[in-house]
Structure formats: structure tokens, C-alpha cells
Image (cartoon, rainbow, N blue to C red; front, top):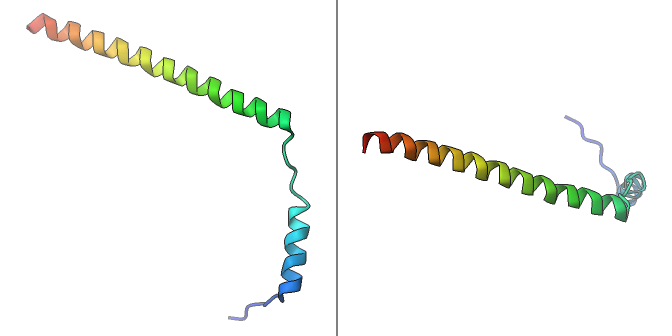
Length: 67
């Protein structure tokens, strides 16, 4: 199995070429996506709190029928 070796200078040139292709997000994009993560986390936590509350009350009501 033959592998092509790249000398260190070619490797650095290739890395620089690949890094130049990266499109970095703007400050506004980072702030908006961060805000969306916090909003979605808050909505998810409220959803699971309500589901937990409903299940707990339903289970307590069901167990009170027999207790």
C-alpha cells in the first residue's frame, strides 16, 4: 500500500489554503444563534416541567384512588 508523503512546507501551504476557505460568522450571527439556543433551552425546560407536573399529578390522583 503506497502512501503519498507531503513535505512540511506543502502541508502548511495546504492548511493555509483550506483555512482561507472558512467563512467565519459575524458577531450578529453569533449573538442571534446564542440567543436562539437560550430561548430553545428555556422553552424545552418549561415543556418538560409541565409534562412532569401533569404526570406527577395524574399519578398521585391515580394512587389516591387506592390509598
